[in-house]
Structure formats: C-alpha cells, structure tokens
Image 1 (spheres, rainbow, N blue to C red):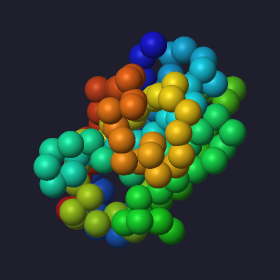
Image 2 (image 1 turned 90 degrees about the vertical axis):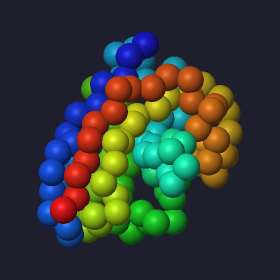
Image 3 (image 1 turned 180 degrees about the vertical axis):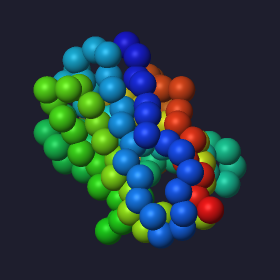
Length: 125
C-alpha cells in the first residue's frame, strides 16, 4: 500500500491550498484516512480525518477553515485549506489506519496509523 501526497507549495497568508492523497490500494480497506502535521514536539498530530462512512474529525485550530473529503472512485482523499496562517507552515502527511476508533482517537493517536505517505510541504508566508 502506498499513499502519495501532492498539492503542497507556497501560499500567502490568508490564501487557500488543496492537498491530495492517492491510496494505491482500495481506500475502503481503511477505517480512517487523515492528514497530519508535526506538533511542537515534532510528533505527528491530526489535522483532519475521515472514515470509510464519511464521518469526519478536525483539530479545533482548523475547524471552519479546512475541509476533508474523499472521492471513492479515485481512491483519493483531499484536504481543502482556507485562510491559511504562517504558523501552519509544515510538512503535511497522509496516513491510513485499519483500526476502528472514534474521531478524537484518530486525531490524537497517530501511532494507530500504520501507513504513511512521504509528505508534502506547505509554506505559508
């Protein structure tokens, strides 16, 4: 299984960007697919997650600005990011998990995500 992220780059503060994560296997095999970025300790923290039924979860800092969605036919998960802030400059990683858990658990326990992409850099200036 491979997860391939794309869509990163440079954007001005207040701007928008859309990230894509293509799952080379059947994305429906996974309970959760999400986007993560390093926290202050350098550990991957959940930004937004989506389960196979379309249920979503968001970190409080991105609610009302970021939207996660999935296209089942393309095995792709998207992260639409609006009103970006400079402090959100980071490498964004796509992760996938087969573990059944709550949205809060999927956002906060990155160790339950076994499959990861290489990341895509987002720079907000």
